[in-house]
Image (cartoon, rainbow, N blue to C red; front, side, top):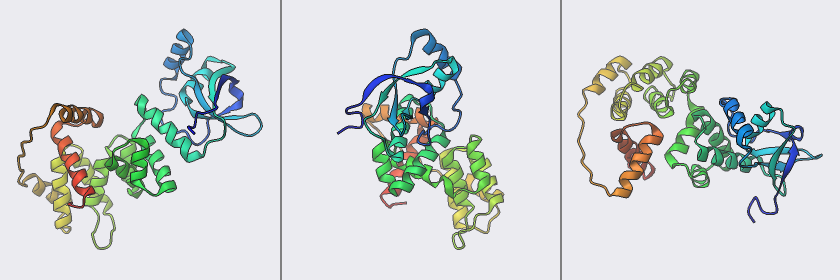
Length: 272
């Protein structure tokens, strides 16, 4: 039986609805609410929100948090909602919310991190989360590793530093024996890596791990002198289109996209 089976659609009072903790979108929640409200006021609510029943005639939002907030902004008393037949487990609601927001492409990196981390605590399996949400395995792996970052790097990620760069910088600054992170080195690596190509970032990581006693600035200089190998690959239209879509989604060039995907595939199979 699907989660929406035996559900009903009707108008319900806004004051009987709670947003709850299962909503995946936790940052920039109010961004664009006025524009959404203006659209709803002009053409109406095109898609009902989805809610699950709670005790004492109350409901919790499963999908449609921003549509609900837009109705509040407009001063509406009710909203059209699909009411599920029974309550939904928080982890399932979180997965549903994440999937809907992925389709709408309006999630921040922090939203993905929070959702995947919570689901990982529940299931303990990166593959299960990847399969359930349709996210690449390597992406889920990065999201759940966010909690391992030192605080200065977490702050940088929340300020716009790409998560994969932060993870790579911390790895380069981590002592292989004691597992302690040199915070100063990690910050230096992160600031330099964000200006570099993926290949140059990997070279910094490699040199830093191989020669941990070398100061960060010298590691950076050495990595810039490392030999680069050229690889020419011929692919079909379907693979090429998929690669282009990946570069757009990740906001990187084709060269870094190919390196990222190759590294992820080889790491997953135990070659790196």
